[in-house]
Amino acid sequence: MRKPKAPPGRVRRLTPREDRQILRYAYSSTNQEFYSIIVLALETCMRQGEILQLEWEHVNLRTRIVHLPETKNGSPRDVPLTTDAVEAFLRLGVKKSGRVFSYTAAGLKSTWRYMLKRLGVEDLHFHDLRHEGISRLFERGTLDMLEIAAISGHKSLAMLKRYTHLRASRLVRKLDGQRSRSKQAVLNLLMPYPAVVASPGGDGMVHVTFPDFSPEAKVAAATKHEAILLAQNWLLRMLCTLMRDGIKIPEPDQYLQSVGPGTLTMVDPLTAPVALAEAAQEPS
Image (cartoon, rainbow, N blue to C red; front, side, top):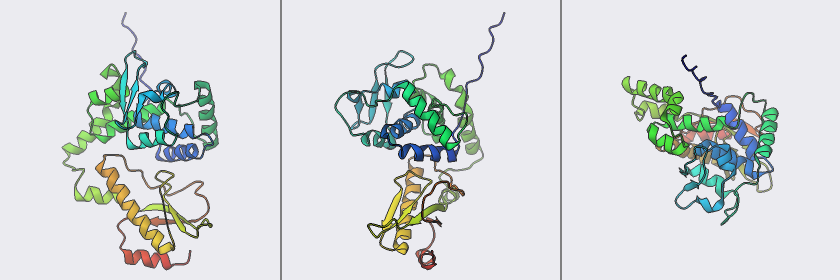
């Protein structure tokens, strides 16, 4: 008798909205560890158990490498850290030794489920964040399968076959002669993004926040005109940096939830300063 085929592996991708909702919720959580755990799962592709068992003595932020002495497949592994992963550690307060996270597996599971219920996100497991991170590595197109396996800890390349369609789609674009760094491709990515313009008071400054990016994506100036100009420059630099580093650029969200008080406006990184000045003079 033939051995029955194993069922196909689960592949659950985060939608752009879910990605933003989860990161915003975790960032505002009373337990700062929750946000860092989610960022590390997406940025390093580490398993939940590997993250929760991290020890500070195995985290080297100078070399940007985390050493995992024990993994699921029984072999130690060195995991490279992206800039966002390093910041996830820094926001916790770096220590010389001891556990990085105080969460237990049961505690994290409870917090995760509570968050999904609050956000209305369905059928999403914490382990899906690892799959999302691996998918994003393939989508970057800068790493081969062996390099991705070294990061994710897969002993068998067969386990990564579920992601080969992501690499194939990139090859199709190359065969069609579409140059990712062509002028038109770059211009298509330099698109307007929604921003919240608000004057929270206290410092007397006008703040502009981009909800599509990290919760810390904020600029401030004395006037609305100056704030929008700074926001335009920030957005242009951010988009160019993401393109240079091969990181997926988030899609603008036309419907924003829980943006807080303020005025929602579109900031175009390529709009002429004169047009911005006229827009800033319009009544808010």
